[in-house]
Length: 309
Image (cartoon, rainbow, N blue to C red; front, top):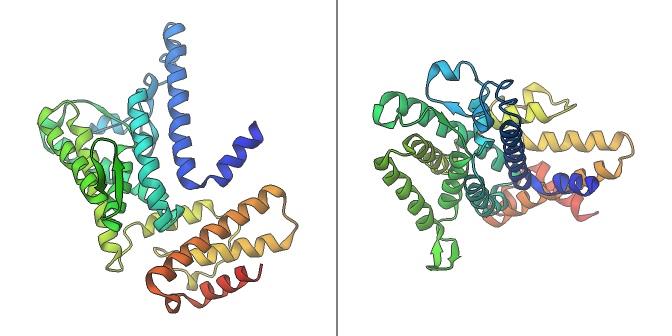
């Protein structure tokens, strides 16, 4: 069973991993809540706050200063089955389409940057407007999911989804329906801070695609950071790599060089095959949109090499 789970994690793609991480955090926190209740507060006596609030972020600076990790951690944290269930369903539906369009690397960077954009909107607007200060804590992947939703709705606005009660609905109409609901939610004041975060994430997703069309990569800095953190032994000359526009092709070439030095295990072979498949999908998508002539020489070489396998 453990080997099957490892294979699903390795081969499932970034979308599967994001859903799994959110689900795992939820299960762990719910388990801590149960232990805390049955143990008479044994967990809350050790942790700085009970359950999900341990990872929740806040608009209050004095609270945030004690838990700076929450700026990232809150976007993987949920409270309640309905909360995590709805977010993961929307993440799966929209993330599957978005990942197919832009690849897993951009899916992850959009998720993280969208969560940060939602937090920024929540923090600054809640501090600036007292009516929004309806609670101290905020948590959930909603801003991240709305960023992905906004990005794919801007990228593929006419894509249809079949809804049970409404029939075929275009992605742009579905997205703006969600935005309107969050906007109206500000008037209720029950979760005003959360609604602000959702709107911030949605706006970021739209801007991400709009700026990308102008040649501006709003998440280039984040993708470069992720490449640095996840790369193990890359020997890429600095003169060939811009700090804010990391070359994905260099990362793939380094992985190929590393793989050629020694025999690969089954796990390494499967990971390498999955990575090649991911890159091939991106190149084929580029050809369908812009034509073969828009490929770089390295991309043409990779495509030729794959055709000879």
